[in-house]
Length: 147
Image 1: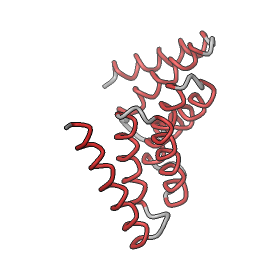
Image 2 (image 1 turned 120 degrees about the horizontal axis):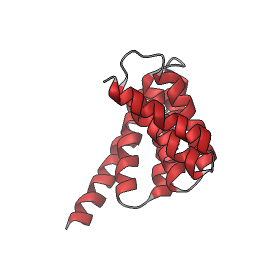
Image 3 (image 1 turned 120 degrees about the vertical axis):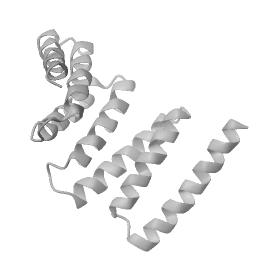
């Protein structure tokens, strides 16, 4: 019954997405929000390829519609980076996380920065970069202490 409910929700999401594209246009931020919600559901269902495509499309839309240092872009970068991390593509995940750190660092008192330092550090360690991995994890700890 739970799977039927989730599948029904996905069908409804796809219909809403189709209508939103018609009403707002392909690159409207509402579409990016919807894509992120669909990606999260797809990821929970184990459809990581579909989740990755939704997250990357949401990132593309946000990049086209928002200013370069927008926290919403950083949020999408973190989602894409996590998908890369899950598939053991640590180089791509590090690129996403490093860009997210650069964006979040411009924001004062940013709790998301702590989490991204942790994610970056774990990818760096998984890639064998102990020096930078340790540095990122230390930044994570320092950030948590200052919260």
